[in-house]
Length: 102
Image (cartoon, rainbow, N blue to C red):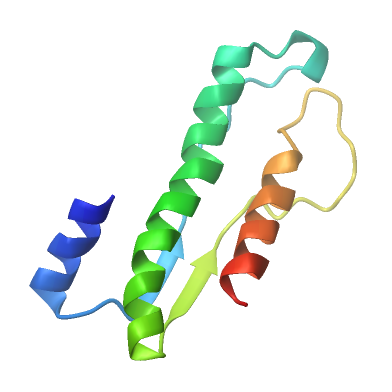
């Protein structure tokens, strides 16, 4: 991730805005039947990826004391839906966002 951020800065001079929009939907099954390999893949992209890129870009934004980070999620309404997406992702994204803003 560091190399990608460095290449963006080299090309554009800085990073003013980060939009975290990468995500995997994952299987549409219940937790009881959700395979751990699928869990790791979804979390790796949707949460770990967000963390890694945010951590790198924050170094630039904090040094400049300027910048904006936009994290997109599914827009989950909070209701439980059997066989639906893993709802912990939205909570994780929200928690990381809150931590980054402090």
